[in-house]
Length: 486
Image 1 (tube, helix red, strand yellow):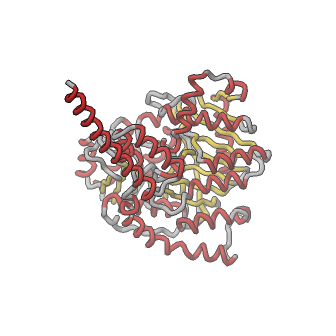
Image 2 (image 1 turned 45 degrees about the horizontal axis):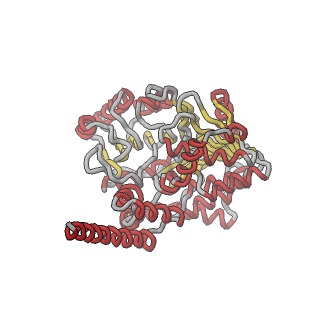
Image 3 (image 1 turned 90 degrees about the horizontal axis):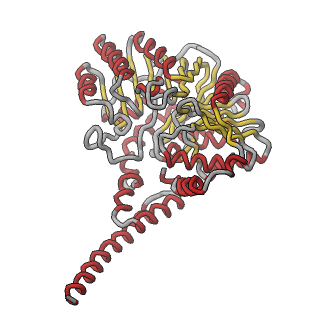
């Protein structure tokens, strides 16, 4: 009996030694070979060692970027070819020779220069921009533009489902492909896991060039939770571009479990469409290993007077340009800041910027939804927003359905609409695209939309926040601790 007991202990010790050694080696790899932020690294090392084996599995699914540089090597080479076209504007700005079409925009040349130096993203002048604040209106006009297309259609969405809205969308694309147009459709491997096989087959059989960004082993099984292509872009005849928060699914037109769906999207005519076309071209080529034929930038006649910068960011970029743009918006503000986002999980730098802005007399206004689609992210959002209350910020929870809009407004001239949430995942792990707008009218319209949404909001006061129960406080703190991993 004693011998059996001793052998059992010995076997356990051997197994435990192997597990312990594996955890140590894996932790060392994370610390020394992964270029993560210290907080994120510490959390993963803790997870790996406190959850033997399980922690390693979770890291491989959620946190690994060991092959990141290799993963995006070809994509970086393609970007280099594009960047040569944008050197001229940067040189002219630095030499003081660039002529801004709107004198007020010149006051923000530091922001334009930052975008250009980081990722060679330039300022486009002479654009017409229309703002949508709901899905039905956006898709009605998008479908009209698609039906009028005569040459090319580029479509890229994170979520693309097989439901009523998508069936109408797919039918239009198939009809245009059969008319002889060059039609391209790019979806994300995770976001499009509910796009059924029969619809994928129909799309391909119609002659549509179809690609999936980081596909899984099977359409519904994808181990890469990180590095998702969260962009939503549509370009028609290289003349009209759409960008914003709306994906393709019935819930985005108010027919899902959340009911009303509040979102923001843009329709652009003018030079900025070239920026959307370039981004689509690079993403499609990376995902498909095919070179979209007939791709060129367009020369536009003057369509309007809006200055627009198309800014992208992702794990393959050297600078977090959208995140840095948000920081510039905060630090340049002197009167007011408005933020609408489904997830409010800022990194430490942005959170301190908002705190300093509020302490400096800038009215900071943050709005996120009361309904939650990701509980931990929602609780982390409450924690960060609650902390801002004591510094004088205004915090609102949207109650009329789900708030999915990604909008930021600074004073009376700067604003941005796009796909990036105000959270760490969008800043560091997702591929995103935002239109940064330099214009009074667009700023005013977005601000009016924000203020109109206030009637459907609950304003959280500091007194209300202090009254939350112990259980709520605990889950907020846990969620906030995990925020670098969310």
